[in-house]
Length: 285
Ligand code: SIN
Image (cartoon, rainbow, N blue to C red; front, side):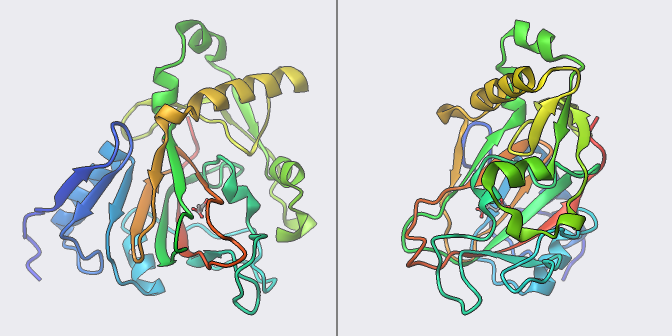
């Protein structure tokens, strides 16, 4: 493989503010110039789709590690073991049967991965291993577009505020205590409510399903503000929908996007299996 080969991908924008499809790439065989180009496109579009990639777990890990070290997990799979760094997100039980009761219900509400850690994730990668006959989409919104389109008075009101991100809050809200041992629940953390992307300098809202309160506000006032900002960020016109095809590889920037899975498929009949890994990020500023 020629390591100086120019990166001549076919780039197709998928929505005005989020997403580009990158054709003509085999992510198992990238040269340094191509990796650099992919990183530029990642910053520009926040989310990249690479169609028809045939990947093993080792290929997934190698590709993801171009962006940084992989993050470990806190939650346990259907077999009771903590999920490995490259793991399956699936609606299947121990015998592989489709289930209408997916293990990770939190994935079906708006979130950004690992927001409850001191260093939330930089990037998430999903690869389509088994896709429902219809539906099973993932939706994304830009937290930067959300911030940019806030009224000036709201921007002033939230300047300098800090948000509490709590794994336990998500567990309590969704009634999901079976995915983690009580003594392994990470303690709540405090992050800026408006975070600045460390590479682009753009500002974005940092609220989602882990957000349990605002420092200095009583519970009800904090809840109202979080709900107001989340409702604004996830307006229909901001949503980009990833409609999965088999072997799609999707990566996205958790520093600038929220996402959620959509239960618009026959969960009790169709298997939906995505392989996933998460790249560790830095402390939000
Ligand atoms: C995730 O939240 O990381 C997975 C989303 C999905 O299953 O579509």
